[in-house]
Image (cartoon, rainbow, N blue to C red; front, side, top):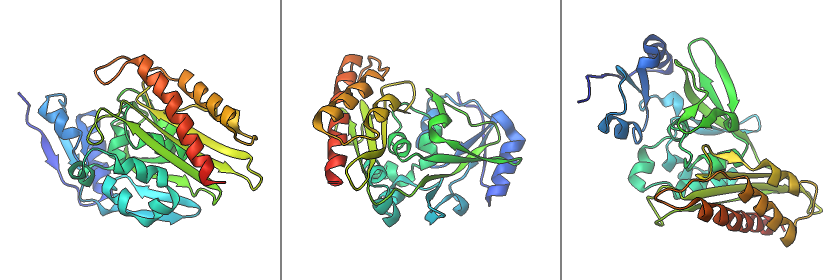
Amino acid sequence: MQSEIELHHPKNLAEALNLLAHYGPDGKLLAGGTNMVVELRDGHYNGKSLVDLSRLKELRGISKQDGYIVIGGGTTITELIDHPLIGAHAGVLKEAACLFANPLVRNRATVAGNLVDASPAADTAPPLLALNAEVQLMSQAATRWVKLEDFITGVRRTVLQPGELMVALRWPVPSARSAGAYTKVGLRKADAISVLSAAVMMTLDNTGVCVQTSIALGAVSPKPYRAHEAEALLIGKVLDTALIAEAARLAAESTRPIDDIRGTAAYRKRVVAITVRRLLTKAAEVLK
């Protein structure tokens, strides 16, 4: 039986941080609640306090600041889909948001909540990794920026410390010669946990040489991650079919998939190679 839990509704961010500092490990954040409600229902949370962040306007919003796109941690998945800055500068993230769960969940789920939950299959992680995003973590004592690649450390594990919360995310505004693509493979077309997911971003110079690329994968390792060896293969080269196929092979080789009810490890590895090849080809064609 679930023990009694205190529910707090702070009026502002400062009050929320004060509550987190007071309760320490016994305090838990509640934003959209799409993950926390399940934990409560299943009896997986034994803390004493929940701090509701859903009413804090300080944690919402999308803006362009000093060469970055900045998103408040409490921004919902639906807001990502609808905002013009995301459509203009992060189409890869908009694609992922459109495939996220279902409309009811998208209206409640927050970007920070999806990342802090640290699922290997977190839908927003691959596109944000591909965009070179970093997250802003805040406590009463300090504020720090951490690369998203370093934030998630394993299954349900992050570098978030007691008393900290994710207040924002940001990534550099991509150049006009950049393009990206995302895909998610699931057992259904909608409202399904990823069997695997992938996102790519690339930048080509005026001669067609690749000067920057990101290949990010989800649900094929204990954490979402970047396939750096595959990325490095493309830098400084004009992309062709053979080169893209080799990068896709390297991306597949970097995976550490498991067998589960959604798919086998062998299936995931094979489909990663196919998926990354298609995404890189799609992004390169946009920039021709």
